[in-house]
Image (tube, rainbow, N blue to C red):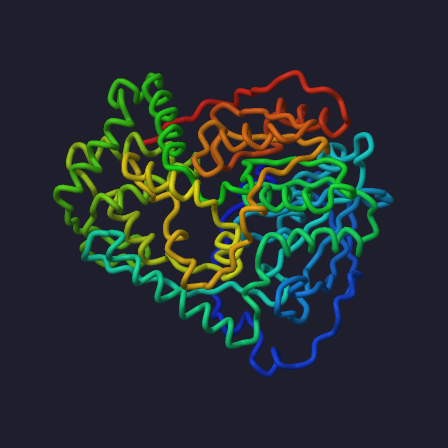
Length: 503
């Protein structure tokens, strides 16, 4: 992450063993203290940002119930929390940063935001009724919170056979079942890892730190959590900022909306003076290349990018669908798609093969928390049926939702139900920012969410993907400042720098 890319949420892949990250059976069976909803194990230290700003960091733990509802009550979960305030300040309110993933560290996010943003961040957060501190939470199951459900379990997909649902699904299900069984044997109630419980955690942290009202900042999955927190605890929410928004019924993606993003990207490629003449129809080129591999997979000899060994890789249509769907989520990777598909049209699949080698070697479970959060949020029957219909006609099929949609039985995730997936209705001032090149949380998500927020405002960011520098562009910082001061916004669209397509 560059020095300017604050509030940028990446994918956390932990390579430590599961046994080292979850309690032993003896620990799980030991008596646990009751939830206290106070900041314990408190430690304070001073930190200086890159611009010389000094702020005070308070770190500690808030102990919350493992399960608040349901037939089985568990023990407690310790949430790692950090509070950051400028030296000499006495914050009366707070900005809580809710990390995405699910599974990313909110503590790291808050510290990085303060350290790299310096005085500018606190000045941005210091307007009007929302002036105050910066709060980060490692959500249940993540980071320094205990227990941590991260795992290094990998799929180890074979290299010598083309990727396919038929080949990959049983491998994925087996690995996930093994990890889920291991976690359960250690006394951890997997049913506790859902967004409804996590939203209650957010309010418990607010109470533990003594704030009457807070401003919620959520990105990607963090916006999904922010909306549920708003639904449950609106009386204690001052304002909400949703970035790359995921609504209550948006966990599983619609293939038609992925196609729409690919089409918009294709149109911008065609207008690019450097690569447009060579790739006038990226969408058509993607479709043709996938159809070619569906008829006849290709086998390529390449050097393994990680081990430097000579390996033979077979690529099929599903490989290309899956890799393209993943690439669209990252603007830097998406910018290489025209050149990559131009190479493949000419019969050169070496770049795609090397990517496939890395992905098949590294892909794995990542975190039990991640799986349980998404699976318990689930989707309505209507949305699942729509996904199935659209996948048959989509250029990339249902690759955007895999392997998640294979995993409910492996984890035994309880369904939070359609009441949870209903739109959130609120009069709390809410700003929604979404990129028009984002296939994971597309512009349609924001349009649907804002319809139910009487004081909501949606701004579409032209040329932005799923990840973009929230505080990097001056026009975007100006919009955020006006919103936090309670001033009216006079735009519903901002144009960010155009995508630079790379070879």
